[in-house]
Length: 194
Image 1 (cartoon, rainbow, N blue to C red):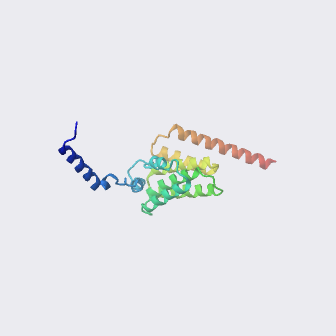
Image 2 (cartoon, rainbow, N blue to C red):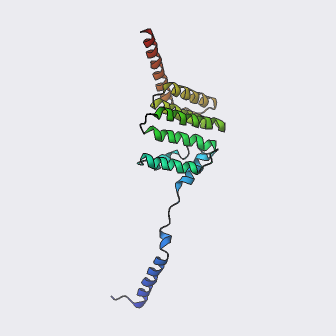
Image 3 (cartoon, rainbow, N blue to C red):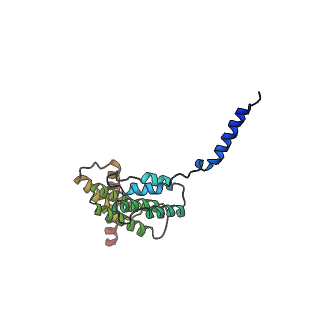
């Protein structure tokens, strides 16, 4: 069966149209950076909004790629937005927690402090509680037990004040922190006796 002149003409026209509209098929997908910056700045959004998306994007990236992503994200935001600062600092601290550096404890402490200050400036108890739990967890896993106990106890008290349900995981963290801090006190008392 031989193609007819009409079908050949249709194929030629289709080929020409596709070639002239080549760029319509190669449109770049919009960067999620602006969307993430907006989510981190949301006042009425869930307290952890944007967190899982950013961590998913960071998965498999090396430290320079992650640092570039955080730099772009910071440029897209308002430097005075306390909601953004609180969420951003916690996300960055958790990301940095995966890298072993000599100054890691100081760096994590500074980011947690920055996040807590910003959270308190929002007067949003839910955000303060979230940032306190996250900071407490960061401090616990970085070996800063006194700070971990302070942040976790503060978070539990805020949850009680606002009638928010504290999860089993959060209670487990608080229990581990308090148990470890008690053990640390016992060790320091024993050292003084010797």
